[in-house]
Length: 254
Image (cartoon, rainbow, N blue to C red):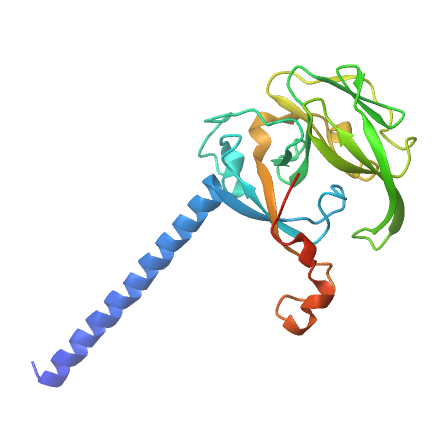
C-alpha cells in the first residue's frame, strides 16, 4: 500500500471516529438535559393573565420537579415511565404555585395556586373564598390597571389574601358578582387538589374543570429568571431598558 493511500485510509478512520464521537456526545448531552428537566428543574413561561398579579404574561420561571415526587407527567410528552400514580410522593403545601396537567384532557400545562387539600371543603360565596366553612380573610390594598394578553385593559381591586396556614398572597378581583363567584361546596377527596388562579375573575381553574388528581402534578414554581413586556426581542440589547422588567429578574414566587 502506498504512503498516500495509507494516509488517506487513516484520515478516513479518524474522520469516522470523530463523527461517531460527536454523535454519541450529542446523544448523551440530550439524555442528561432531559434527565435534569424531568427530575430537577424545568423552564416555563407564562402565556396568560390567570395568575396576575403574582405572575405576568412574559414571565419566564423555573419549576422544581422533586417537591411532590414524580409521575408520568414529570417526563417529556408524559412518557409512561411511571405508568400510574406517583413515586416519592409528597403533599403540596396550601398556597404553593404549582404546574399540572389540566385534568380534562391531560395534555395542557396549567399553573395555579394550591387552595384546597385532601379533606377540605372549598366554596365561593359572593366572591369570597371559604375553606372548611370559614371565610378566608382578605385586605384591600389598592386599585390597579392591567392589560392582558388580548390587549384588554381592566381596573382591578388588589387584595392580600391569607390562607389558613398563614400564607399571604395577592389576588385581583374585578367584582364579587361574576361567573363562579358563587359555587356549591366542593369536597376534596384523597389524591386530589383544588386549584385557583390569583386573577380570580379571569382564571379557568378548579371552579370550572374540577379537581386535579395528584398524578397530574408536575412541579412547583420557584423563581422568575427573565421577564419581558413583549415590546422587544432579547437580541435587541439596545432596547433592553424598554422591554425587560428588571425588577422581576431572579425574584422568588410567593
